[in-house]
Amino acid sequence: MKSLKIKYKKYLLLSTFCLTIISCGSKETKQEESVEKPTTEEAPASIASLTAEQIKTVDIQFGAIEQKQLTATLKANGALRVPNNNKANATSLYGGVVKSINVQLGDFVKKGQVIATIANPQFIQLQEEYLSASSKIIFAEQELARQKELNEGNAGALKNYQNADAELKAMRTRRASLQQQIQLMGINPNSLSNSNLRSALSVTSPISGTISNVFAKIGSYVDVSAPLAEIVDNSQLHLDLNVFEKDLPMLKVGQIIHFRITNNSGEDYNAKVYSIGASFENDSKSIPVHATVQGNKSGLIDGMNITAIVSLNDVTTSAVPSDAIVSAEGKDYIFIVTDKKAEEEKPEEGEEQKEQEAKDKNEAKNTNFEKIEVVKGVSNMGYTAITLVKDVPANAKIVTKGAFFVNAKLTNKGEE
Image (tube, rainbow, N blue to C red; front, side, top):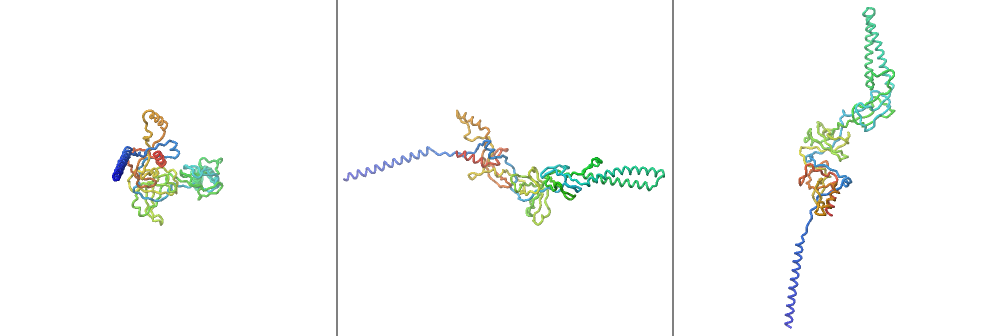
C-alpha cells in the first residue's frame, strides 16, 4: 500500500509540471503573435475633392486672407446721412395745377431733367405782357428820337423830350423784369411770339440724384411753398456716429471705420473720420463723429442705422471671415484651394496606374481643398484674427463660405 501511495504522489507532481510547461508555452506564443502583428493607425485625411456641381449646389464662396485692424477697436452706433447741400426739392416758382409727373420713386435724374409740368393762365399773361412791352419799346424809341429832333431845332419843348426819355427807360425796365420772370419759368424769351405762347411750364431737378419722395399728384394744385419731389444725392453719404465722452480721447481725424448695416450684416463698408464734434448731442452725453463713406456705396441709403468698429491703432493682423473657420477635435482649421491630391488619388504602378490616370482625367475639373490648422484670435465685425500653424502661399484662395460642408466631405472620406 505504501508503494502505491508513493507512485500516486509522483504521478500528480508530473502532471502538474507538464501542465505548467504547456501553459507557459501558449502564453509565449500569444505574446509573440501580438508582437508580430502591431496595430497601425492611419493619419487623418487632409485633402478633400469637390466637383463643380457640388461647389455650386452648396454655394461655396472663395476669398483671401486679409489684413484687418481687429486688436484695438471701439464699437459705436450711428446712422448714414446725406448733407443738406446734397438734398434738394423740386419746386415751382409759380403756383399751378399739376399736369404731368415724369418720375417715380427710386428713379435717377440728372440736373435739369424735367420732373413735372404745371399749368396756370398766369403764365400766358406774363408772356403777353412781355411781348406787349417789347412792342411799346419800339414805339417809345421812335417817339424819343422825334422829340430829340424837335428839341434840337427849337421846335419842341424840352419837357416833352424828357418825358419821352423817362417813358422809354421805364418800359425797358419792365421788359427786363418780365424777361427774368419768363426765364425762371424755363422759357426762352427770345423764342416767344404771338403764335407759340406756353400755358404750362416745366419743373426741373436742381441736382443729380435719386428721387426719394414724390409729393404731388396729377390734378392737384401746388403753390410756391409746396415741393413736387425730393432728390437725394447718395454719392456724398457720410457717417454720423455717437461716441461717449470716455471714448472721445481715443478718436482722431483720419481714423478708419469699418461698419455694417444693423439689419443686414452681410456686407462690410469703410469710412474715414473727417470731423469730431465739439459739443454734446442733445441730452445723450454723446459726441457726434462724422466720417465720409469710401469705396463701394451700393445698397446704402440715407437714414440707415449702422454698427461701426473704430480702429484705434495701425496694427493689422491676418484675418478671415468667421464662417471660414471650422473646429474639429479641439482644433481650428481653414481650407485653401490646392493642386495637391488626396492619397488615394495618387497613381499606382502597372495596370492600376492606367486606371488611375483615366480616373484623374475624368475628375480634372474637380477642386481640391487642403485643411490648414490655425489658431484663432479676437473676432470683430464678422472677421476673426488667425495665426497659421504652417506657411501657405501668399495669394492662397480660401473658402470663406461653405467650409463646414468641405469639412464634412473630408470627414466622410476619412471614415471610408
